[in-house]
Image (cartoon, rainbow, N blue to C red; front, side, top):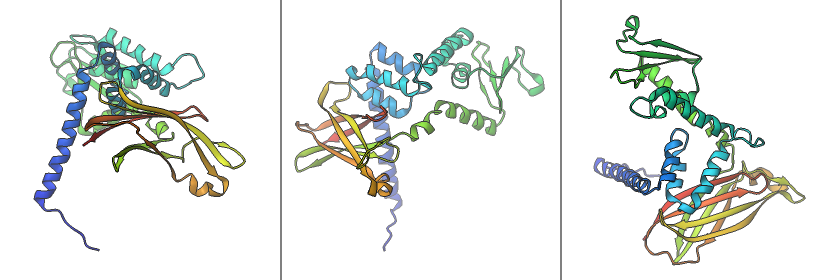
Length: 311
C-alpha cells in the first residue's frame, strides 16, 4: 500500500478552501437572518441560549409557512413532562428571562448580560455575596458580586461603573469550569437526544435524474413486535426549497420498516435506506433539503436540513 503526503502548498490550499466554505456558509446564514420578519427574528433572539446550530440553520432555510410547526416542535422536544398541560421548561425559561430583565437591566436588557445568561442557564445560585465597593482582600477594586453554586463560585465585576456586571475569572481553570457548566446547561438535552433515532439526508444526481436519499438508523428506532419481527412505520415529509422562498417540491408518504426475528442481531445495527425520486426539474442553483421523519409507533420525530448546490 502506498501512502501519499500532501505538499505544504497543497495542504495550505485545501485548508484555505475549507475556511472559505465556512465563511461563505456563515455569510449566507447571516443574509437569511437579516431577511427575517419581526416574529421570526424575535424567536431566534429569545432562544439563543438553548437553540442548537443545526436548529438555527434549519429555521433560517425553511419557508415561512413551516416555522410555526418548527416552533411548536422546538418546545415539545424540551418538555420534561409531555403528560402535563404545561411545558415546564418553556415556562421556566421565560420566567428567568423576565427575572433577569427585572434585576439586571442597565443600558441593555438584563437577560442579555452575563448575569442574565448565567441565571437563565444555571438558575439562581445557592448564595450571593455583594461588594458594592469591591473586595480589596481579593484584589477586586470595582463593585463585585459573587454567586456561589454547589461546585464553584462565579464572580461578576462592574468595571465601567454602569451597572453592567461582567464575568471575572480567577484563573484559566476557573474560566474553563464556568464555561463548561454553561455549555452543559445549554446542551442538557444532548445526551437524551442521542438516544433518539437519527438519520442522514443527501441528494444524488444520476443520468439527469434527482434523488433524495435518507439513511435512518434502526438502533434507537422504537418498534412494535409482530409475528414477522419488529416493525414500525415512518411518516416522511420531504421538501426542496430555495432559501427563504416558496417550496419548489414536496412529498409526504409512509415507509414501513421491518426487522425479521432471524435478522434481529444484524438488522438493528444496519440503517434503513430510503430513496425518493424528485419528479420536477431543478435548474442550477442553491437549494435546501428539508426532511421531517416521524416514527408512528411512539410519535417521535426528527427534522433535518441540508444545503445543496445543483450545477
